[in-house]
Structure formats: C-alpha cells, structure tokens
Image 1 (cartoon, helix red, strand yellow):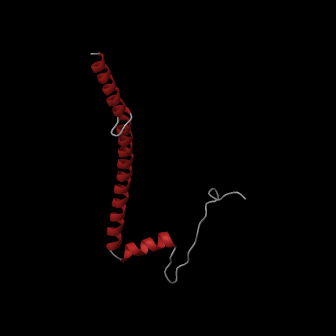
Image 2: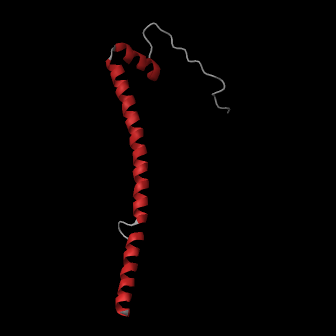
Image 3: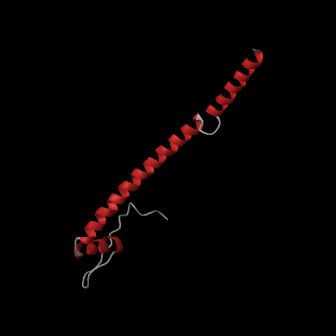
Amino acid sequence: MKLTFAILIVLLLALQFRLWVGDGSMAELVRLEREIEKQEILNERDRLRNRQLEIEILHLQSGPQAVEELAREDMGMVKKGETFYLVVDSQTQKAP
C-alpha cells in the first residue's frame, strides 16, 4: 500500500511539474497569449498603413493633378515661371 501511495505521489508531482514548468505549461501558455496580443496590435497597425497606402494609390491614379500635388508638397517642385518661397517659423528653429 505504501508503495502504491508513493508511486501515486511521484506521478502527481511529475504531472504538476509538467503542468507548471514543462512543454505546454501554464507559463508557456501565458507567454504565447502575450505574444499573440502583441502580434495582433502589429497586424492592426499594418492594416491601417496598408489602407492609407491603398487610398494614396487610388488618389495618384485619379489623374495628373494628384501627382503634381504630391511633387509640390513632398519634393518642392515648381512649374516653369513660378518662384518658390520657403517661410520658416522662427520658433521651430533651434538656437545655436
């Protein structure tokens, strides 16, 4: 009887060890759930960025006015005969 009880105790301890520490343990489950949450946040951020890019692509495909607007805003391009003026706000400049 003592031998059976000892075997059951050892078996119980081995199963508890596996439950809390081994492969497929509760600690690993919690770690994986955290990783899933982080990945879902990254996926949502990427979905929003993709949507913004899709909108920009559609806008650029709409005609040459969109391309001209982008060239003027992002690259500072000007048409022939135009004069480009850059207005600098004194508050945004860094002191020497």
